Amino acid sequence: MTHPRSILLGSQAGAFALPVCDHYSGVEARMRKSLALQAEMAEEFGTCVFDVTLDCEDGAPVGGEVEHAQRVVELALAAAPQARVAARVHPVDHPAFDGDVATIAGRAGHRLCHLMVPKVESVADVQRVADALDAAGAADLPLHVLIESPAAIHRAFDIAAHARVQSLSFGLMDFVSAHGGAIPAHAMSVVGQFSHPLVLRAKMEMASACHAHGKVPAHCVVTEFKDLDALSAAARKAAGELGYTRMWSIHPDQIRPILAAFAPSAREVDAAAALIERAMAADWAPVQFDGRLHDRASYRYFWQVLERAHQTGLALPGTVQTYFAEPASAGH
Image (tube, rainbow, N blue to C red; front, side):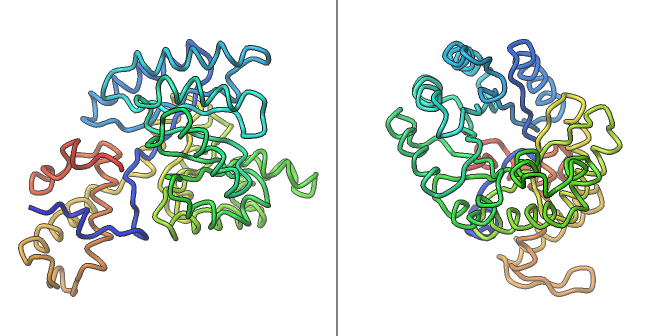
């Protein structure tokens, strides 16, 4: 039987199914703890509910970039087979960039779920990374990029269109700093980042660029990591108002609130499963459901509700659970 994803999802309807949380850590002890926590929660939820990104940019001490990259390789290669492990390298104009890619992608590219590159400014930067990955023998490694300046936001649609790019992330702190004091520090707070017009506009532009090309928009961090209520509110706004389908975590306590904020309700899941079951029985022809007429345009939305439920570890009705066995539901 043809998988619903291949019938319903096209280039502008989410080409990739990724966990809704991307957790960053750069200190060795925390990287190890993050991978252990990922394994524990995968067993709890029955699927890998967050990525672990091993950070070379902020995690590597100045002068210790080579050793840190080697440590990232060791951790990635030692991770469990089902783990989703990524790495963030230095920006393309940093002296350590070429060494990062050659070491990490060259030795562990087959084990990584993606490579994150910060401070991407243009399509030329993306192509530079793609060429470096090709040279390292990692031509199939997906690329995630961090958009952190006004110029990069302006070029976000072109960057998202690049075939190697799977996801764009918004870099709040650098974006605010890039304005030379024209945006107040309050705009970096959990409240200000959702109220300052320039920041809000940038977030929406980037999310729109991703959705135009079927890529995944990832929301920025909340630095007030001890205020979980504020984190939950931010995650709900990102998911419910700004069009984001993924969010960064910088502390283990942030992971579960992010999962909860991006998860559909049990009622939504049940309704989506019932509609998809009826649509499949009709060979995807239009059907009446709950007093409304539905066709593939709305089937697509309700299928994505089920995908989001799976990505956040929610239980799925047996009628659709079979479509989420790992080989069928893994991201491309």
